[in-house]
Length: 226
Picture 1 (tube, rainbow, N blue to C red):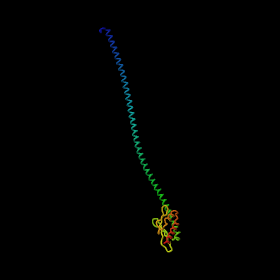
Picture 2 (cartoon, helix red, strand yellow):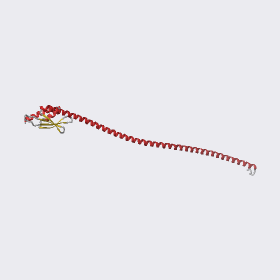
Picture 3 (cartoon, one colour):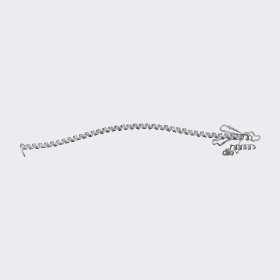
Picture 4 (cartoon, rainbow, N blue to C red):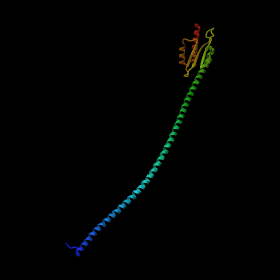
């Protein structure tokens, strides 16, 4: 082994030491440069990510603001629409009530018109009947010695006289008129046995003159039997 006091050996050692030192320092420097570059790149990437995230955050916050305003606008619009629909529904109900009232009034008017027409028809029928009775009275008053009397409750009486030669008693039949223009017989004094048959013929024929003639004949027949 060479002595450390040997100049060449000392120089070789120093040269080897320097080479090792330079190598180590170079590797260290390269590593530091590499780590520095990596760290700078990491910091740049981190900064870019932070900037991007900050921009995304601002954009998200802006979008949230827009969405919030949109939701508020939609809520206000929905509230207004509900209010408008409530008013429209109430107005429709009021109009429907008015329509129902008008319909009821129209139905009442129709009923009144029907009643009026029915009253007119009944009045005309009664008037025609009374006119017919007046004609009968004029025709038979002298020939049959009959008198027509009008009494309350739409009733009238036919009073016959001169039934017998010495009989001046009144023979009376009380009658009326139904809404269907048919005749009613309330009483007959004195009673006639075949009066139901005569009444049935009257309802079938509506010929009051024949009915009164037959009634007088029955009164005469009955008076002769007495």
